[in-house]
Image (tube, rainbow, N blue to C red; front, side, top):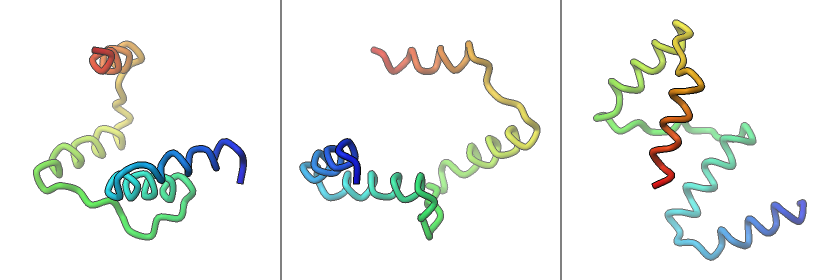
Length: 75
């Protein structure tokens, strides 16, 4: 394990269990080790399906749209 990964794991150990589980799922997904698909809230399913259809049609947000979306989080 690298020093950086070890530092990250130590930091995550200080977090509540539910947050640790979220981070663990993300890590497993990134490593290609996730066995179970991510559950989708039924209320979000139409948006997920529309997003998948847009991706299939190769309709992606422009760089300008992405930058604008990220700026909303800068608060």
